Length: 229
Ligand code: GTP
Ligand code: MG
Image (tube, rainbow, N blue to C red; front, side, top):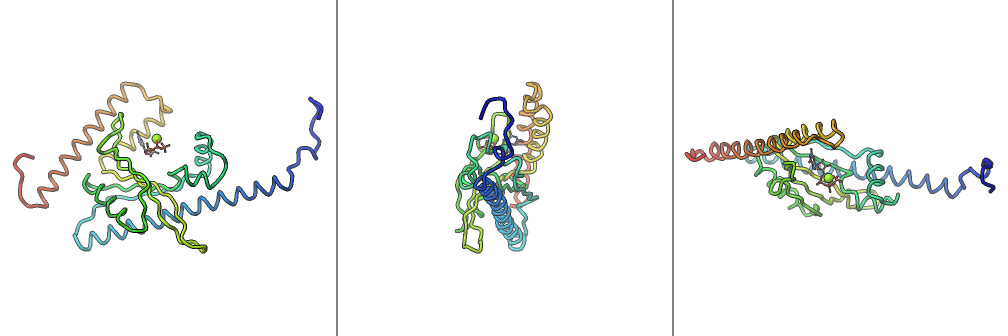
């Protein structure tokens, strides 16, 4: 084609093969999102069983709050682009581990570890990765227990493993993270140094509060007051 000449409709039209591959990609993408909705349902059921059983047998509820979300197609595509991945749903499924996300808020630090232990002890749950930002907080003070789990969803074709990110934290950690997220968003990631410093101090204060509450709780549950705490 000569440079500068407009393309004819025949030249701009997609070939049948291109139309077919776009159609296939749309199908694969909606299936990918659907499978991640299913894995959230599976894991939420497991968590609610653990919670109810604990309330029933121990009269103790280790979980304050649960939320979940599937990444929107737009933010998934942005992440695929950012990571330089091809538009191949098999690769995306393997590489992007937070398409399905569940956040569990517990009362106490010990509960966060306990809930993760109970979940991963189930023989259909495979622990792919754990990042313990409670033991090793991020430099800004972010604390949370992150786990990448692989759990089967039972499709018509049989069990299919799907990945899910679970974030487990205390109420104090969650309070801090949601404010930090808002500030981060407001400044488009470029948070002024003074605020960064204050946020890190606030994270340390939240952590101190967690430790204090945990000591009080242990004291009340054991019924033997600890004069040191
Ligand atoms: P992506 O950030 O999702 O690409 O993955 P990553 O490998 O960096 O995982 P990481 O475990 O660091 O964080 C994943 C998620 O944890 C984020 O999407 C947030 O929900 C949460 N998170 C991590 N760091 C922070 C933080 O400093 N502040 C807040 N508010 N949330 C955080
Ligand atoms: Mg990150």
